[in-house]
Image 1 (cartoon, rainbow, N blue to C red):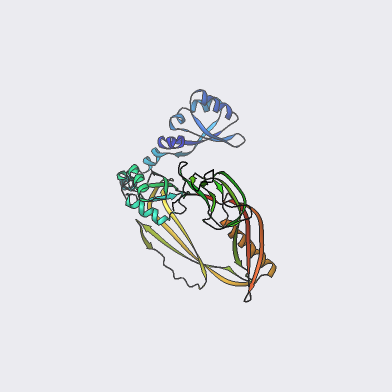
Image 2 (spheres, one colour):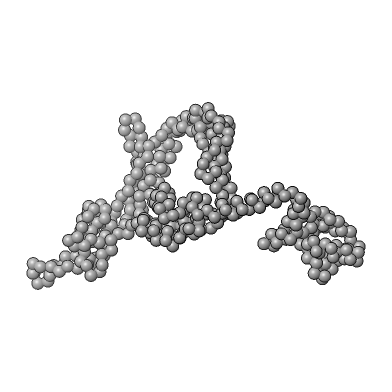
Length: 395
């Protein structure tokens, strides 16, 4: 803001030469003559900036300190106007430019979506468009509160959404709803059943009857802690309770990856073809269309949007597409290195299946040879709570 204000009112850059430069600065400060960006260039010579009004007042200060003052440069809007004051076309063009920028700034030219992981970008853009948020729309007609309500009703996976308009950009930040298991109310009878297969390691029943013991093999959906408690006294009846407890079991997660001995690598030859295009209001204009002659290549796409600052984005884009020639080279990998890489890939795949609350207690690596091919298999043994509540008589 300080630099902008000085530019608007205009300032000069001066060279002060003499033995008493410090005294010159002190007297200017005492007489309220503002100086800034003072720099010592060499012995007995310094450059500094000051206002036009202050420049008219420094002659007595220079005479008193014996310093020689020279004008180096005039900077600022008043000097620009003075330079082009007779060029009416320049001022007309500048005024037209400001009007055009102000007009374009009244529309939305960019929609940024963040926070979505499961929700696809195209689905979010379609839902936003249905609620009046898309590129090219008049931004003062957008009702963000109404759009937030519409998005929450439109998409069930949304847990929270924020829509903010900054300049010509709409920033949408969302949080997705997590699929939580059904929580059975405390006053409703239920069983604890297995959510997956496993071998029982420990059963702690806080309420209900243990239906399995340590070492038992259980299948998904099997009752682990029953909410049906037999009545005392030998009666045939039973009372229903809300079963509670934890059931730890051994579970396994397995993944495989092929052992590849011949590895293909893509190497760049150093040759490339660049194609440039201009986008105006979502319409792409190919300026220098070049034919891609490469057989094997990779493509890099660079999009530069015309913007004033971070949030004032304009509907003009410069797209550079580079076709980079590559050649495929096949390299032989030793059997040990190939096995090691395949095991690492299989381990990463298996680890992705393990829930956050499970503890990995053992890892088993093995190789399967079949029809001349080798496959790496990694099995992770875990200890985890496999119990989940299910209403008695419910689905």
